[in-house]
Image (cartoon, rainbow, N blue to C red):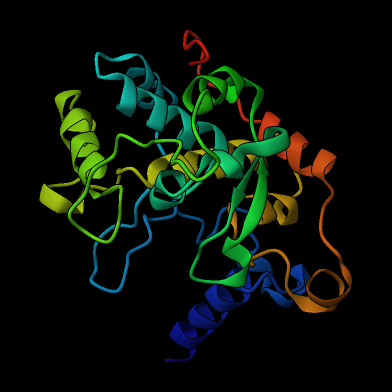
Length: 240
């Protein structure tokens, strides 16, 4: 029993990254207990959703589809906005090369998101000749409270045409929200400060605690724009 207890304690110490010398000498091996991390599971035991791979994103943005879905995917890929946030954008929300997200479940969701240089032409095309109260994606029609429910279903059908499915049935680990995950991953991997990225996408994570949660007054537009512009479309994909 004593040997078994020592082995258990040793594994605990390694996992907790305690001082190296607290581990018995015979157990001091740098790879002890180090195994590849398993996919995280949600409360129902299903694997968590993930970002798109570069190849998946390329196929989605270059595949044959209508202009509405192509534009909608492009905005999602280069802003990190949630699906309904895109659907609720009006012409008046697009002034001075900034998207103003006015509605959201939390205060953090209401924010300013600089319009990516790759979206300038798309936005100009969509707002031309419209009133300030008109929706950017005015053609969306839905019987539900959410304007974007139909385009969400259209995207699912489109995605499955390419075999972009990770999991079975409705439990696919990739979906429209994967554009948001891809945007965040790209910005952070490009070296952007996580607390600024969280501000761009409307999260509070990374901005908690005394310094960032209470004293930091937020990023200015140049910082937000740098975060957005750090995200690039895959090679071979032209701006919309």
